[in-house]
Length: 418
Image 1 (spheres, rainbow, N blue to C red):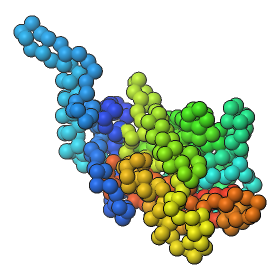
Image 2 (image 1 turned 60 degrees about the horizontal axis):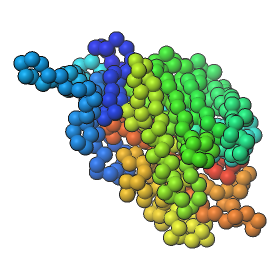
Image 3 (image 1 turned 180 degrees about the vertical axis):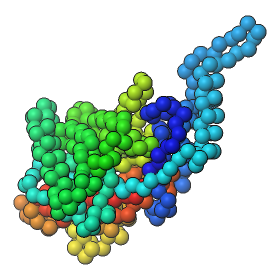
């Protein structure tokens, strides 16, 4: 994570425009890039302490202010002059970035779980803390947990959200108790976690915890939610998001629940684009930015992408029972939609080396095959993806699932070094 020693601006985030990812500074990870295959068109502008304010679209420079003509015949666009000047400053700051920047390492944990409106108040150690080491050496600096179906998605709950606040508080308390229990913290104050922010929408909940000593350096924390469900606006499907400036790096977290049903790929793609385009954050000074305007973006949730219908449900079950994942990965809908550029363009994902996380008999480790229940093909509905301005700034160190079984989904966890 980048920390500036000197600031040309007094504080806060720099001026931005819709055409450039917003970043006060980078989150750098000198570990090399992920070994996943990425689209070749993912190269993006290098960010620095100053973000170029010029908006460049497919047709060139986009200006709003009108030209001004002087008595001597000269025609000048004041907005263009300002943008060109600030772009020059941005270029100079980029060139001399190393003179005023320090780099610190950061560990980030993300967990996503569709809890199927279940809760049993048991410790969540297998989900949240299974990779910390006894001395806490692998304990994350930032923990982001996204839940889906926190409440039943019935008409009453969707319309009035009468249970969402209570359920959100219950889950956040349980997460906090788990993170700060002495078996995980060792009663060491330096390993204590505090809640930074949370956001909920009907069954969706996103909560961010940070180590207590980091909280003073978490600034411009903002959140937003977008409903894309019933009538294209209700919260039974949609996304919740929290963004922050962590030291001098900007990070955005999104938790979403997209359209269901195996055949509804187009609906999922549409939901993604809807959430992506509508999430907005007011960072002050009348400036509003979007998801892409950050150094790092994490997107998790029950994305609901299934195995392509080319493979029969019975065959998918048989492949899962034999732990033969390659055929399933080749026919994963999200992988195909990303390759075609239909959704999650410029996002990365780790290798799916764990069994599909849906659909299980609640309370068991068995895929749902009871005769009185609808037979569904197992699928990797639950995913974690990321987008970063420079691929070598972030490295995924694990991507796995937990075996907690109160729901018909298994939790999924991802850890990163930045």
